[in-house]
Length: 162
Image (cartoon, rainbow, N blue to C red):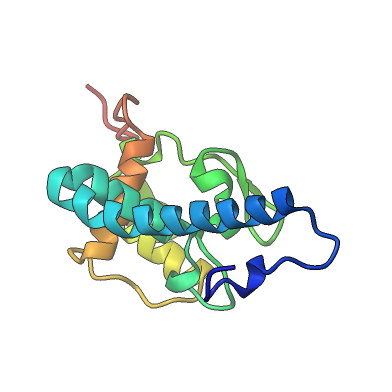
């Protein structure tokens, strides 16, 4: 057995093919980790929009924006692609097409808000986190992700007659 692979050491009675499967599994996992490590910077250099959308999706799922291990997916399930639910039990619609409805009037705020303002409202009120800078890389990534979920949807500025 190669040094550094104690998990692959054959236990008495373990067939050699099981031992080989363990070795292959470790190799596949290591390759996947390497691929992820080298893919993100390459993607950022070659396709900046795709990289921003990817980063936004990662942030959406990460607990780094809030406290107590919560993420955007605490309420917006399935990456925002399916109906969600607030901690109160109130159902909320999916985020498919949501970016196409901003800016919009928010009754509770008593003013027109942007998508960035809504994101910060969710972060501060829902996740109890710190608001993001409106032109910072995390906000740009989240807006890119949510806008991607609205790809092809008609823009709906509520209350605007054309």
